[in-house]
Image 1 (cartoon, rainbow, N blue to C red):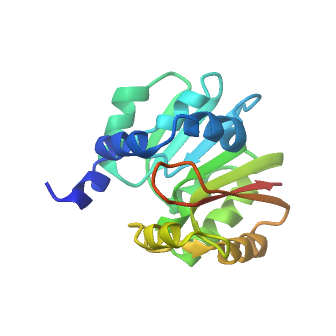
Image 2: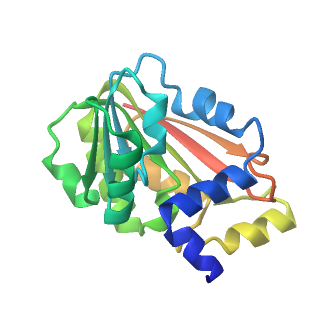
Length: 202
């Protein structure tokens, strides 16, 4: 099996993520990034196999994912009456009514999509969020205080659009009117690899 094929298989990729994540990683993601308490309606854009649905047991959850294999796996692993997994991409967002969600998450998604699609996602995300709602992203990042090893590893990420901190910030402020809070994480993985999270509030 080619190493790259691990990342094309949703289950194997999830196993890889668990292997390289530190013990505290899941709790940090839950408590600082997803912050599920009080969420009623959540959209998981690029949901993969739907793993993050587990963090929202009492919310109405919609996962959108462009890979049929991931959607099939999501239905097998995480199916529930309040969870819906749909095959689709950013084009589906235009079909969602205004003010439908109080949380939108895009975990490890933006560095896989080009600037035009990111812009459309941000604009549609702002529209379908309720007033006071959050849009939260998490992606690998290049930044000025990064270690040489982390920079080298991040540059080799399979995502074609890994951006600098300022590039992410400029794109977000251009297409999402509202408050932006960002944080860089340097220790989520056992390998040198830096992430940035953006929390956008409508």
